[in-house]
Length: 160
Image 1 (cartoon, rainbow, N blue to C red):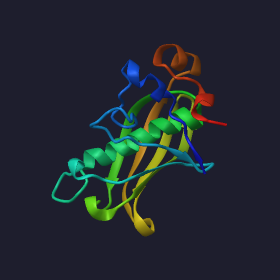
Image 2: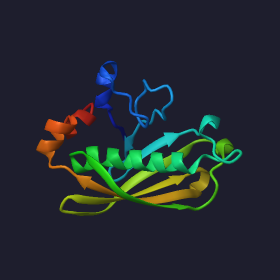
Image 3: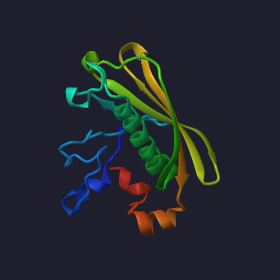
């Protein structure tokens, strides 16, 4: 498994403050990502400040976690950037703030022309699944992603 480099961190002094992945956003999730060859993974410990119902991680935060990893899947595995065009979420069971480290994963379900459907999941200890999502991503052609949306190229996400 290899760690994914966050090339956007170099621009944190220039206003990069993504809620999902910027280490400079004091209110954010500060996610980091890993590639196991097929899937993208993130490991995260829920905090009380993201609580919804008493002791339960807010469903909107769960949706954000899965949307964020889907966008990173597009960066790293699809070699471009894009925008979320739809998301269908299933909440399977309450994710308690006290459950410890969770795993957020993303894999490609299908890619057709300019739409990628990415399957995401949040799971905990012993594989317990808390929520799943299918995220549809509209993909930009790489040239447009680079010119208009600051996509640094797939090579920027690797230290190798």
